[in-house]
View 1 (cartoon, rainbow, N blue to C red):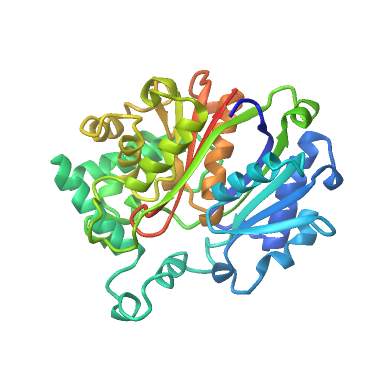
View 2 (tube, rainbow, N blue to C red):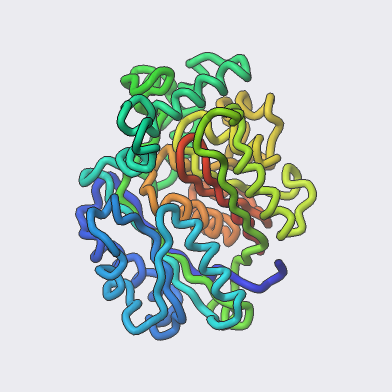
Length: 381
């Protein structure tokens, strides 16, 4: 998909407790990206909000945010859950030819206000799984973690090293919630078990956050910035709900989403062509599992390389130099933040976590139990 839709500006914030209402957080984030571009809301043709009614505790929650984001008297719609899906939807709205610009605003407040695990709990089969109370987001991830460890001959110490490596990346990024200077795996190993083999620091930290992304058609993009980042391809896929028949040691839907995105982007050898990958790794084992599933790394080599820092910012493929979702997970905004981090990297604006000069980057978002639904976006300059 050559130079048809570009990202021209981003603004995001994350924190353990930002101390803001949703409306104020959305207003501040949108105002930030508009000011960066030197435009006002009238320059935006359509708005796409990404949030979740269940997490917000109110139905049709986007109507309360239309005013703060500037969407009143504008074409506005909503995408539930991960914000990367809203980015794809925004690109499609521009590709259909009726709009030249689109504003995506994804947000969640879950640092101290609501358990983020509840939305997955209430998506389970209501007649069996939910009532039995054995299956939930964490127990499902623990089952997948155990399957992955066994398939690769890894022990629980590997999980400690993998988490420490991810958090060490986040230590250099002032935009994350949780970091670990020095990659001290003993600190990870001393955190409490949630579901064996997963400890607290093997799992994502619930985070407040919002991310605003402005998309534009080719002609409009060049008017708004001299450094557009182009959407080269995207793909989305969803796996079966039940574990039966699923190979938990990989993600078939992530592989399928990546295949679709690479085909659209004209990428034949992702392992050599993609220079940066920002994946939504909600648990310590997921970054190398996802990289291997998407064809970015060898399945047997990826776990060792990741835990030893072999995918750091100086590597040929930098994997989550930002610290990823293991350092900050604002739920509905997490996938959008992966897009924003890739945007910063491609423009050379990532500061202390800048990973060389990548030309092509991959951003990823997920939803559901055990990587059930995945979306991949390929970006380039």
